[in-house]
Image 1: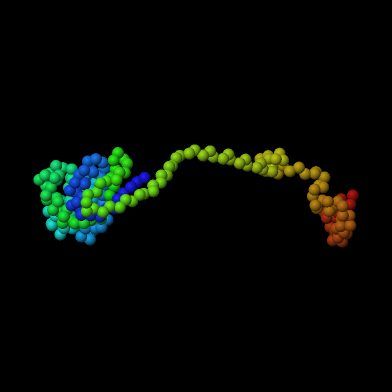
Image 2: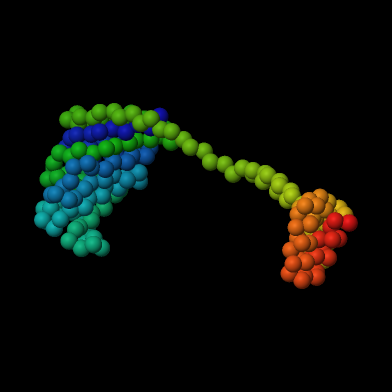
Length: 218
């Protein structure tokens, strides 16, 4: 499981021997939680570089060479701790330690890995460190081919089922005798209704309606 350390202590105690030893044997990463002069920060990269961002006042007191940040108003300092000049006995070691003492006590989160595995570091005297275990979870994504369902068959049209064609005919079979026609049935079976229509036609001097009525009677 992943492990990191919450570390409280003077920066000078960390960079005197600790950073150089652990950075050479593995990958050391650290970042301050508390800010310097209200907004600055300190970090240690896996390649053993000490990074400091601070305001102009702190920058002038540290005495380390840096440059103005692109945002303006801040200064960035990068110190290669594995360089022989900053190691114990080097020409720039005393100046680095003096700058670290000016920064004072810091609170940072630190992780040390050897061959990709987290290892417990050996902290120097005067540094308080608390181990923090991280419960990590892994999500795996894969591409799967899902077959598409077959298209449902469209129901055939009524004229297709009954043999209709493209001429607009419905294709519905009907009795030529007119037995399915409600009007025809009523005319053929209701003789009293037919006689009534015939009498009305005679009284009106009609022709066509009377003929229909007589035809229905016969």
